[in-house]
Amino acid sequence: MDRLLNGQTTRKLTVKDLAEEAGVKRHCLTQKHTDLKDLFYRRVAESGEQEEPAYVLRLRERIGALEQRLRQRTEDVARLEALNDQYVENLAVAVAAFDKAERNWATAAQRAEVLEERLAAAQDRIDELESGPRRLAGVSAPLRVAGRPVIVD
Image (cartoon, rainbow, N blue to C red; front, side):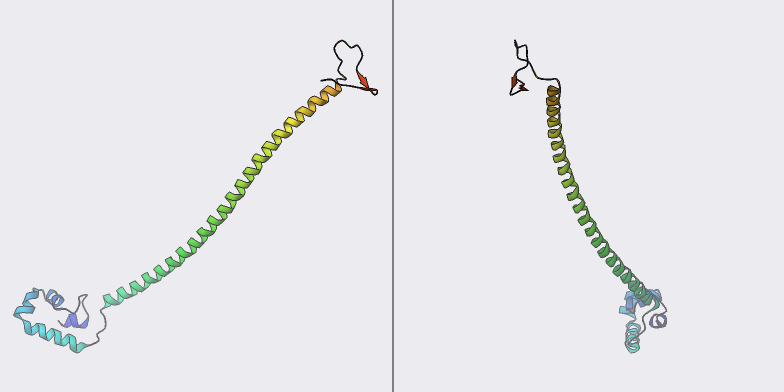
């Protein structure tokens, strides 16, 4: 009983723990030896505010350390969530820029096709002009209007 009251054990100040400390069944204290039970309760009441056992102090320190770690982890999570949001925003901007560039590329490719067709038509026209005026069937001399050769298609 003295060890339990002095905090030299890891047990609580209950009749059950007193019985376990003494190595007897609980009913021995609650039914057969009620005087010991009453003495125990009286001494617990007289002791008033007792210091917590060492294991309770260690547990409280451990809880404090764990709460500090939890606060730190919570701050880390909040910081990482903000960073993740920033990355998502940057990625959205990059995707939009890529989509715009892709649309511009498609437009540029279409313009290039049109320009290639025009270039081919212009080259054909240059080739025709360089080959000289066309002659009409059955006409021995080139057809001229106002002194210039006329090309008949």
